[in-house]
Length: 624
Image 1 (tube, rainbow, N blue to C red):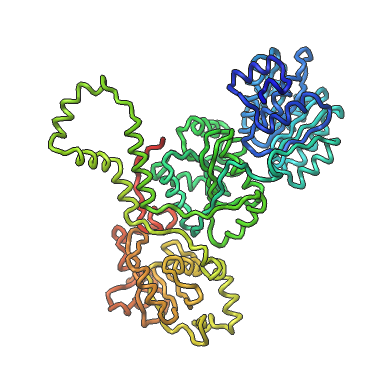
Image 2: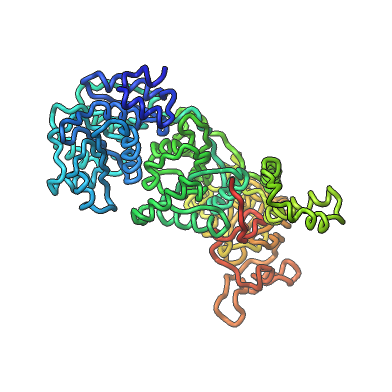
C-alpha cells in the first residue's frame, strides 16, 4: 500500500511526496482512512517513532476548511520540544494546502508573539497544556469552532500532571468535536480520559498493547553504582559510531554525567528543565546536526525528541515509572531502523528487570561492559575502515609528496603502518592497559554482594543470630565457629565506599568469594579490616593483590591487630589507630597511596580509574 491508496487529497499527497515519504507505517495505514471518513472518536496505540504525527496530522490538514477563518484543529502534547516538532511537521504537510496556518503555543517563549500569531489567522493550534490554559485565561484562544482535538502522547501528559489541565481544555471545546487520542501505552488514567471525554471510540493497536518496538534490542549490564559512569564510557568507546541518548533520573545527575563526558573528550551535552528555551533549542539543534553525539537528558526534557538516527539509548538510572522505560527506549529504533537499549543496573535494583520484561513483553539480554581488549579492537577496526574509505586528494597533497617520501624513507612498510596506527591508537592502549573487569557476576547477587548485605540487611541478619555484630564478630556460614582471621585492605571511604555493604559487594565481586564467608567489617577513611573464614583470606590475597584502584595497587594482607579506631587531625595525621603492623610494619594507613603525592580526590565517582586502570585524561575522540 502507498499513500495514494489512503484517500488523501492531491495537495497533501504532493507534500508527502516532497517530504520523501514512500510507504505508510502501520499506524498511518490503519489510522488515516478512518480519520478521513469516520465521525467517531479514535484511539491509536503505537510505539514512539512509528509515525503517529503523520497519522493524525495528514487527515487533519486535509479536512481544514480554509474559507472558514477560525481555529478548527487543536493538538495537545506534553512538552515544548514535541510541540515545536509537531507544528513544524504539520506546517510541512500543509505546504501545498493554501491558507492552512499552524501556530505553536508553549511556555518559555514570548506569549505576546504567540497571541499575535493566533490573531494573524490560525487554523490549527499545537500547544502544551499549561500555555494553552494561559491563553484561554487571557481570552486569546477560543475553541468554540474546533472540530478535531488530538491528545498526543496522552500517557506522558498524565504522567507529568496535566490531568486537570486536559480536562479544563476539553471542557472548553464544543460537544460536536471529534477527539483523537494517540499514545504509546494505555495506563488506567488514559483509559479514564478515554471513557470520560470520548464516545464509543474506534480503537487501533499497532503491536502489543504497552509493548516495545520490535526493532529494538533490549539489554542490561550489571555494575556497581559507582561503576556506572565507567561502564557508560566503555560502551561509548566500544561503539565508535554511536549516536545516543543517556537518560538520568534527576537534573543534577544529568549535569554531572554530561560534564564528565565533556571533560573526558566526548561530544556531549545536557538537556534538562533548568535550561531556558533558547538553551534547549541550541542543544537540540546541535544534537540533530550531530555536533553532539551523546545527549544526556531527563525523562521530561527528552519528550518530543524525534531524531531518526539515534542508535543507542542508555538508562543510567531506571525510571520510577516502568511505562517511562518504553518511552525512553522508543527514542531509538525509529522510522523502521534498528536500535539498542542498554540499562546500567546496580545489583540491588536488578529486581526491576522482571517488571520491565513483563511490561514490554520482551526478555532483556544480560551483557557485560566491554573489556579493554574489546574496546581497543573495535577502535582499531574503525580506524582501519576510515583509512580504507578516505578520499585521497591527489592534487592537494602533490606539493608535499616528495617531502613525505624523504622523511619516511628509512622506515619499512610495516613500520610506517605501525607508527601511523600508534599515533591514533596509543591513547586507547594507554587508557585501557590496566582496565579491570567492572561487571557484577549475576550468580552472586543473591549470595550477599549487595542485596542481602547492605547495612539494614546485615543488621537484621546479625540481630537474628543473637547479636554477633554487637560482639564484634559474625558466625561463620559453615558452622558454629566465628571468623577469627582478619585481612587488611588499603581501600576505604575515600575510595567511594560510603558504607560496609558497598565494600562487601566490591570484595565479593573482585575476589570471587561468597559474602557469607566474610565477617565483621571495620571501615575507615583509607583502609578497612574484614573478618574471613579459613581459606578465604588466601583466596582474596591471591585474587586482589595487583588489581588497581585510582591508579594504585590494591594491597590485601593478613592482620594480627584489631583497630582501635582512626585518629585524625593530630600531628600524626591519619594513622588508623596505631597503624597496620601485620605486614611487617612498613605500612601505615595511607602510606601506600601512590596517587600524585597524596593529593587524593575524595569523590571517587569523578575519577576515571574505577575498575582498574582507566585513567582520567582529556583526549580528542573522533566520532563518525
